[in-house]
Image 1 (cartoon, rainbow, N blue to C red):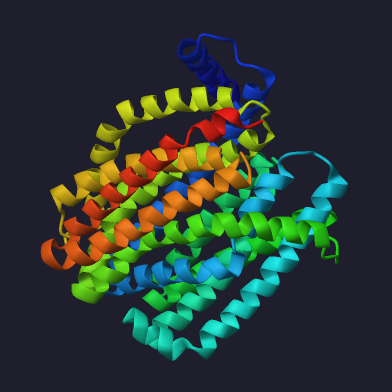
Image 2 (cartoon, rainbow, N blue to C red):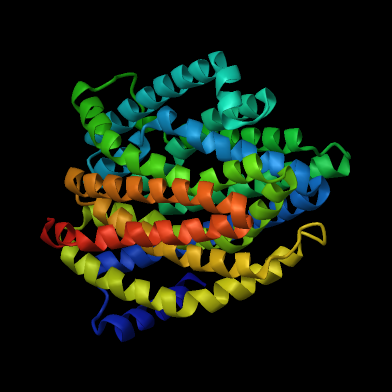
Length: 430
């Protein structure tokens, strides 16, 4: 099966780029295959988990689960400070086990300290934050724990990426999805499924995968915080975290505004549309971008990488929209009659999904150039976030859920324009 996939991609590569694939390209394609299989199983398991949870819980309870995820995404930011991204950037550059052990050990110690300290801070001020966000203390506290487990899971997964262990990354990704589905089904059969149990199931899946990855990579760990790498990881992370924070705003802020100005049921309906038209397609684009950052970081000629990326983006845009729209409509039907179908919202979210792929692809390539590229990405992300926040506040109370989709589209267009305007940074990078 792998050979068939490789032959098809090689043939496509020759037709698109008019050249034979180099050894690095062949390795890249092989890694794409591993991640495709892993993400494929993960997407299937995640899809059925979400459908089952959505149908059993109903829009209101499902909306609470969506809120926990959305709030946790904000709380995750200070827990990692994008040190996981810095880990992938620097660890992927050279295959030197002494260097890799220092980077990995330092990154884990830093994230562990930041995560525990942030969690204690949020728990101490939970009443204040709950009022600011307009949610219950229960949802906020669940979100803190969710973010804590998520930070450990993301760090472990990115460690595999940084070591170019895409086969293992794919296996653990699929295992996470399977574990989540099995536990959700178990609670359904016991008639115990609530939004609380779904959240606890995700906690369990995050922790077990984290533990398994750490055990498999135990030879890379030292009880040593390297001063040089702690400074370097933190410096790069501080540039990238601005983009990460902005990204969190424009992917999760809409749900919080919907909850504030509309009904909790609308949060569930919007969450279902978002999952079918944006999140699931994002799994596909994540297959590419998961392998792309480590490969781009290792490449010594970013200009060639940019040329190839431009063609890939054109192919994706040409083929993507009709496929995304049609698939999204079919998948949403599986949520059931309680989730009212919104044609305009679906089409606009399909456009948003295309823009997400374009934006993220150039973001990862720009990040691979180092601190200068990270600064540009941070600026574009700030503009994206501010645009999204302003438009969401203005549009959602007036035109409902469609306002959330419009704010996403306009925001992403601004971000892409800023990145392309500074594309010379990639062309000049080594």
